[in-house]
Image (tube, rainbow, N blue to C red; front, side, top):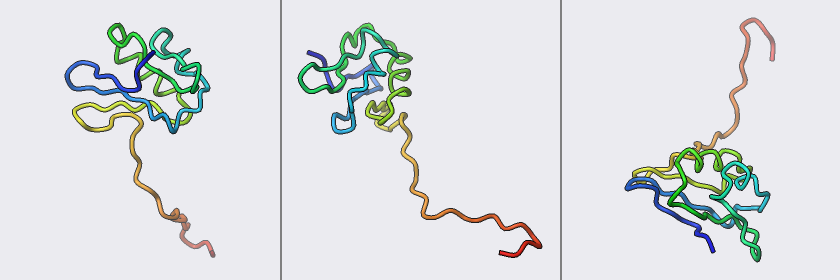
Length: 99
């Protein structure tokens, strides 16, 4: 059985948010042999973390449609980025144009 959280080197942590994972298996195609789906829960699991590269973790995280694979370095989230909420969009007004 795989893990939901692994440490990669001394400063990087990769983990799977099991509440976000919808078992579409894109991560298993982006990083074959590293990610598998748990047969009972359908949640992605990390296997063979000793042979995995950081590039494989990023490839899997980037194809995840629900952003369930989180990568942190030195305690800060690197991927997916946390975006600041936007409260309404500012409408561009062209000079001389009536609203």
